[in-house]
Image (cartoon, rainbow, N blue to C red; front, side, top):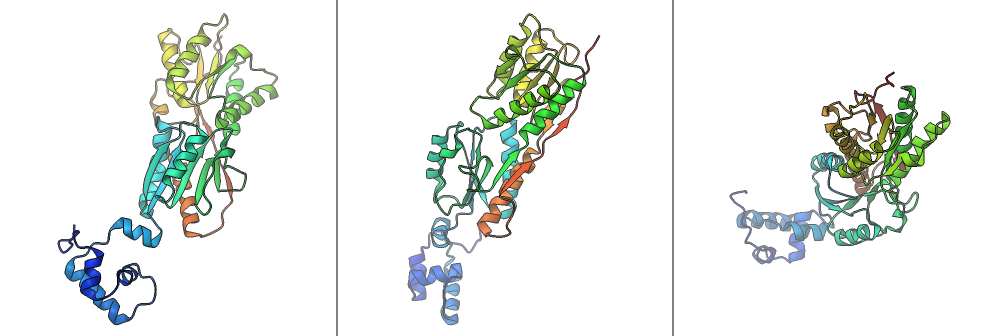
Length: 338
């Protein structure tokens, strides 16, 4: 703290000492409105002499800026979300903003409640909405917002989507090229639009090569490790187990890998395994995981950059963006043996 500062001094005391109104003190400190040069100089001298420190809350009321951004995510658990927050935070810090982060539990009603709770406390919002019914979300008029996923209505707010279908197609084509035909899928939650798109892309690639996804080889997960483990145990118990498994995110792939080891099955010799997201831990597993790389931290940075553009009303950019997703082949996938 500046040794000359005195947090106990109020703006009213400064106004009395400078023989001006509180409103004049506020205008001088915020650089707003016409002020006679002599008055401005007198106010600044009194502020310095008394060591007055403007209260951040009062300053935000007068400037209508809080230097804070609200981030609403489906969950705050797991490496994907920690990487996303890291990217948002890095860009926010560079721009002088703080983050208020909340989890919505993938519930549109909860998103609405959080938006209402944050209204007036933040300058803008980054919202990750992967629910099919995201159209029910309401953002107050005039509040800048960037959506990761689908906005409430097409074109209503800037949005950024991962190329889920393209990434999943690349995984399917890779496994098919290796000779796999009995391929299982551990999908994400049925109400999740990212999971739906990944399953759609994977099915389309199989169908294009004359391979159908058998009903018994599709297991619904919830994007968490335990659901991947449970799905793998179920798939391994089939009369004819799959030769390859695609988990719709890396967390489920990690749970799947753990279960296969428990059963004494080797990856990739007995079962090939691939995931999606390429979270940092994926490359350090044994074996390293084949996955679809999404530049997660960079996605967060880009979302914050887009929001800052809205806050500063600068530069028109494409309203909708698709973030590429590229297959990264590692040792967890291999061709059919024998």
